[in-house]
Length: 83
Image 1 (cartoon, rainbow, N blue to C red):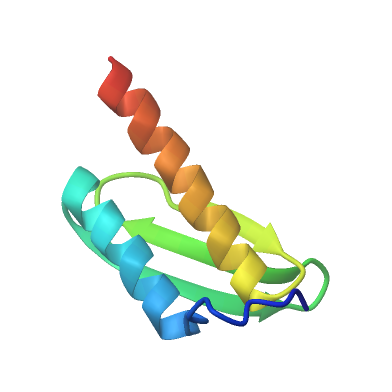
Image 2: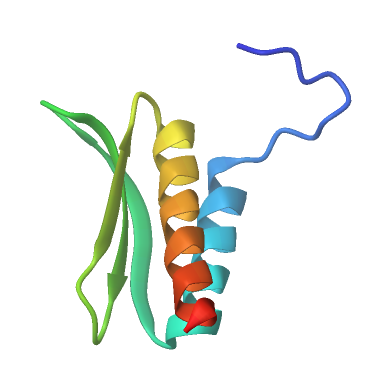
C-alpha cells in the first residue's frame, strides 16, 4: 500500500455514502449503492437506479471498485452538465 501518513483513510461506508449522495443529487432516486465479491471478476461496485440502468465498475479490491465507480459517475455527471 502507498504511504498516506497525513491523509485520512476513508472507510468503505464513507465511500459508498459519498457515491450515494452524488448519484441522488444528480439523478434523483437511487435504489442502492453496494459492493460485492464476484468469484470470476473480483470486486464489483454498483449503483442501482429506479428509472435508469444500473452503473457498474470493477476493481482488484473493494476500495478500487468504489473509486472506479465514483470516477465513472463523475464523468457522466460532467458530460451531463456540459450539455
